[in-house]
Image 1 (cartoon, rainbow, N blue to C red):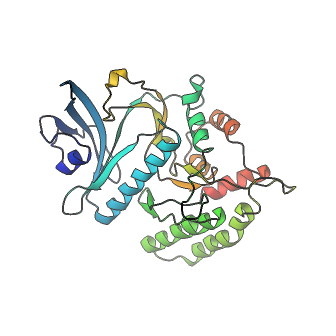
Image 2 (image 1 turned 180 degrees about the vertical axis):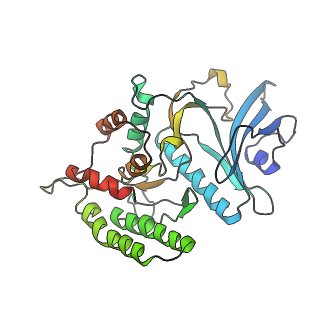
Image 3 (image 1 turned 60 degrees about the horizontal axis):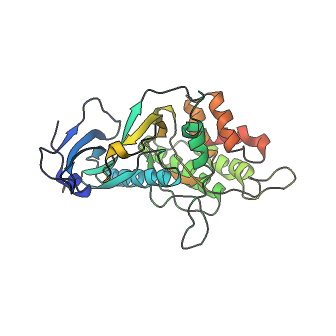
Length: 321
């Protein structure tokens, strides 16, 4: 057990008495941050003691940590706003110290044993149903333009790769510029320029993306009938290691936890969200595997394949790049 940094306690409105709040990092780990469970004992107005749990991430990686935690904060809450209970809600983030430390505090996610993604029962809390609901919830309207747009209010990180998420009216433009070309630039910065790779990526962005994802093409069948695309929230880094079965508990609200309806269901975490074409999510899901054929059958009953349906497989392969 470790003492809890004061900035975290203040952000969560918790008592600063070290006897009442501790950090437990045993059995936890992350590739880019330090993680821990914050256990807190609070006292209500009726002098009743309540046990609370929070999940805490910290990093000393300066500006990168600041952007990473801000991005995850906004990502978690965008998903939680669209589908409550599908992921833990982010509660606070900010500077940890006067040096380069930052923290992120979220609701505590109590993970239960995983089940087969395609198993039956409790359909409305299944991954297919909850992800389908997420992918059929329209993105918020931009207050400046009055339109739903592709992008995200802040940069996010997929692993340690920064994604700037500039807003676009065109999905094809967003995917070409904010994903393909941005990742190419990041790769060149780390590994040096490769003329052959740059040529392939630029041709894909210039030729393949408009052909498959063009504004007047995607969302319409071979007869030109359709309604185009609607931006929706996507997790952005959804592979089997970022999904499980569990329940959100100990979220620090004022109600006694025993009186709350705590729903157990399939949940996701560690998002890198943006407002995108729903099928963009399926690229990473297919690339890393872990989601069986039954899952996709259930999912597509909620979210039908986008027109033109005959190009579905081509689009998913493109989204794996």
